[in-house]
Length: 501
Image (cartoon, rainbow, N blue to C red; front, side, top):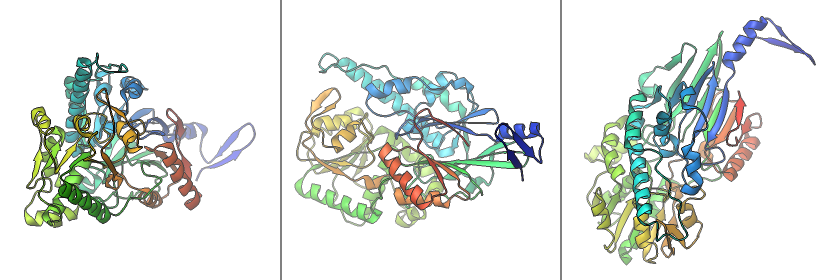
């Protein structure tokens, strides 16, 4: 064990030479800079510097009104060609959405992720490129009629830029399947645990060592509920000690209702809509949330708990993702087999469920009367086909708008959730006359108790960084940790702040 005699003007090291000590400190010192999802829930980017190398954890897009997010998205806070590696936790846009820009601006090395994340990310980034182009073209065509004037921002990247990202993906298996670490250097390695958030989502454990000394840092990315339909539970870290943890805190201030209660509430909403012949609009993230909702609707349908009303999934991206979900059954929970596999059914396909692919078929839904359910992306109502359905139906009191997930501050979804009316939709003001129902228990994020139990489970944990949460959620969870785990050092980083661990 190293011993230090510390005086006012010098430090004497007992049992080790000064050059060797400085060499060990250089290699074991780990610096983390939080460039995104710090005091916020979007734009995840965490830069880890160790052994003279730079490792970026996620490269996500800031989501929200273009007027406030375009500058943050169009300029990266570091030089892409200075990075040695990128590790991608999962394929949601706020974690992978700026990879095309990163490569476009000079990044030329590996992007490590799971097999499912690599496959899904392509479609997520393709969709983002298409949505940016379509929204830009729409606003350009209607620029003269939009009052007050709306800023016209060019797309951040196009489909060719997305294509240039794909050769950089280095696909890796979860440790539970491969039983092997991924070596970056002889003294720096990492492995993936299952995060249980969406298909392919991973918790990353980084380990650095020198002269027999080891330091570990874990990054949850986004972490799933305990439990969540379809997917396996988040895996606990086994290596001891794991001294440092970066953990998301989207719901650091509240607990979700049990899945059984959420399912019962959804059933009541659908029965009410069927009886009164109303239309249900359900904005949902094409990756994760759409599949979770379909899974629950399939359960209700099989049990004859809901009538055979038309259900439309108006998301070309969600339809494209089906083969990937059917391929990667290693990510599924045992409940999938119990619910559907034993009956030789596919969980994401059933009678009365229609995937809407073409824009013509999407527009054909506009004159249709209820009862019916339209599930459309995006989840925060900042882009995609759901905007056109909102524009067409939100002023109708017979519309039921069911909000199924977290709405970030400043987004259209958050404004509607907070009761603001009228709101701007595709450049035009619309009164919110629809019945708004919030069901955030559908979230794929762990709640307060789930997060606390995970922190408590990490062996040898000394320091935790709370990210991916709004400031009040972070403060609430920090207070809980300080009360229950007083020996744990808890940080809530500001954007651009750096810490040495």
